[in-house]
Length: 362
Image 1: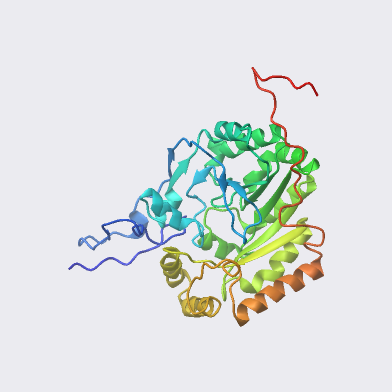
Image 2: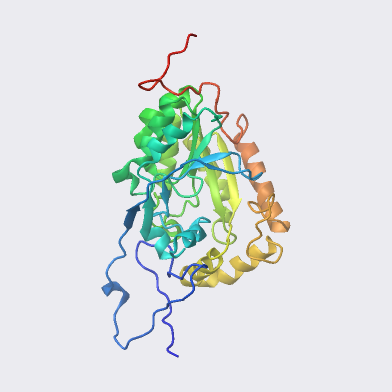
């Protein structure tokens, strides 16, 4: 049998390889064909976007670990290429790889705003805050061209419906003309994910996301426009970026953040192998230490999906990280007057009148 070629990183991409998803009946791998071709001679991996109109757009969950019941993901897959993204395994449901396919083969929902308006107007609908960015980033690069997230915000603003956003993109600043007025009515809040302040680490860990300094600038501009902002120091990775926790929180506080959260690295399903491969490629000297520490914080495994512990882990090191976070927040005044959902107001929800609607007597 021919020897499989070892994977090598591609410029501007997070995953090192493109393994088959867990539902595939066949596996494929590259072998050496005798030609010595340098990786720099390979054509760049381009992003392909496929439209997939949706029948419903609001997803619902009952997880006790997540502070929202409803979410919308305008896109499946994410060009940011964050190698640690817990959403990568979901690409297997599309018959695609959680590796490079996840960041190069994106599915867009072109009728998301239209579908949302219809769902909000259903007589049985009961408003609760909707999260944008629960799975993949609503402001990933293709949003500049497609504008699906902005269309969704326009519908939510017209209905006075509360929305929370999580992103690591400066593109959210484009929509301050919508988010600012919504925030003034208690209808909007934004969480900005800051994984590291080290630009070199960010370029390999999350290659197409905004640079750390840009994210801090985004926090400052959102806060300056009256939008409540929290910082999400996530994921915390032992021996890689966990030492930055206090610095990240302090920098975000200085930029105007009023709330904070953190998550210990999660490695569900295929992500275990993808992240291990990334470590061996980009941080070989730390790989063993990182993985061993994760096992110590996950009951001897690389991931435990149980509610209550999947976000923070267990064990001595996980407890130390938890204490560090709470002490830093207390010292900085973060989370002092804030709840997980930004105290968003659902009482103002009111679908606008459409042609043919009956006027109310009151």
